[in-house]
Length: 130
Image 1 (cartoon, rainbow, N blue to C red):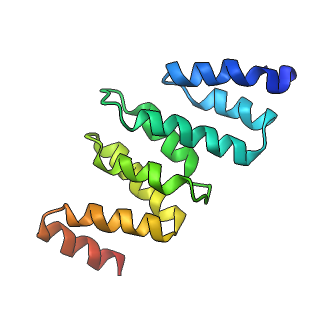
Image 2 (image 1 turned 45 degrees about the vertical axis):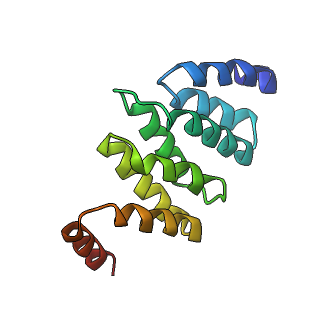
């Protein structure tokens, strides 16, 4: 697929939309596209996934992990939606990804999520973040 270059992008995008496995298509996309375009693709796929209620959170978790190393203004608004996911692993991944962004949008999303927690949890978390 790498040898096909950007001609393979459509097939890889189609696979990303329908499969729980995102690692190998993203690896191939990294070989044929620049990193900014790959981040855009990950954000786009995650934006479609965060609105789905699935019993298998692996795809969301992996997409969040892939975004943790990329500081990009497109990331926090999409990742913030994952803070309300029913799966704890997805919520944890969203928090980690937002922390990595270090932006005002990310901090505001985390503040709003903290305000949804019971007071006892909020006090403990704020003390640990100080």
